[in-house]
Image 1 (cartoon, rainbow, N blue to C red):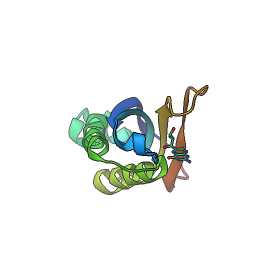
Image 2: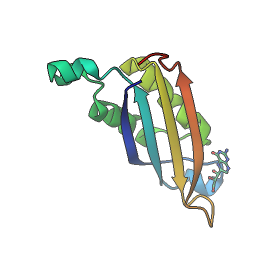
Image 3: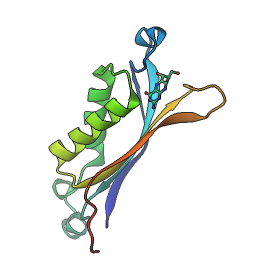
Length: 121
Ligand SMILES: Nc1nc2c(c(=O)[nH]1)N=C([C@H](O)[C@@H](O)CO)CN2
């Protein structure tokens, strides 16, 4: 299965369950793998045939930057829904890190997989 990926996309937003977190913006980092048949754009050399990682990134920057969820679980789910619905992605894995949220940890967060992976090459 081919993928297109986005690694270490940092976006600042309002996120968290505590009162003090509702008053600040915190950085989040996204790592995303998306299933896509890359043989088509490889044959045409045309950006129109790709799953455009820049377009996906811009959409997430817009959405996440304007969001204000409490849980990282909720935000991760909404991002996965956008990618699947708006970009036609059949399967994705999305890791959302919240650096600095827990003293002593580099980061905490969630990793979700949604959709079906292709069963053939
Ligand atoms: N599974 C989760 N645990 C926690 C979350 C979360 O979103 N998902 N959030 C918090 C607080 O907002 C924390 O990040 C503040 O340091 C605690 N646990």
